[in-house]
Amino acid sequence: MQSWRDQVNALKRASEEDQVRRINEFVNKRIFFSDDLSVWNEKDYWATPLESLGRGAGDCEDFAIAKYITLRTLGVDNDKLRMSYVKARIGGPGSKISEAHMVLGYYPTPDSEPYILDNLIGDVRPASSRSDLTPVFSFNSEGIWTGTSPAASSAGSATARLSRWRDVIARLQAEGFE
Image (tube, rainbow, N blue to C red):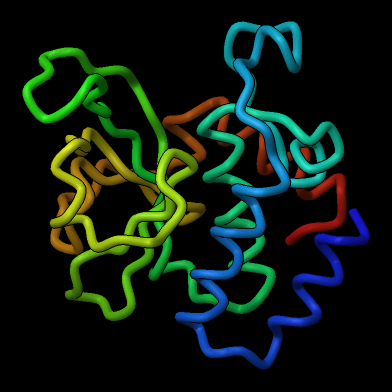
């Protein structure tokens, strides 16, 4: 956990774009991908950053949550960040096979295309260059939206609609996050 605190302290004065890029790298290097059954002995568990980094393992939701909370800790506005549930095409461009996946979207301005922070791809890329991802819905601590575009329609409160997100928020508060 000291490495996480050191990273946050080192990036406090960095540009927002640098924070986004470096936190994506940091989390992708510190958490080894493993399914929830192997890590938590549960079918679907959404971990806090302290839990994921403490175990050094997690699945795609855990990567996205760790990036979201770390960027919020650094002061990135909530309206610039949305966790996005997507269908990820696997097996190459012609493949018809997809699986559920979660990424973090970063919106530099309210009307901009999001940049995607993903545990499957090391660099941060604009959503338009991620034809392998089909957005389903996105959310943050303020709401839930259908799709991922800045103009996506609101579907209400994420904490009211997503019990796993509500559980993460409660555990984050117990860990001292606001």
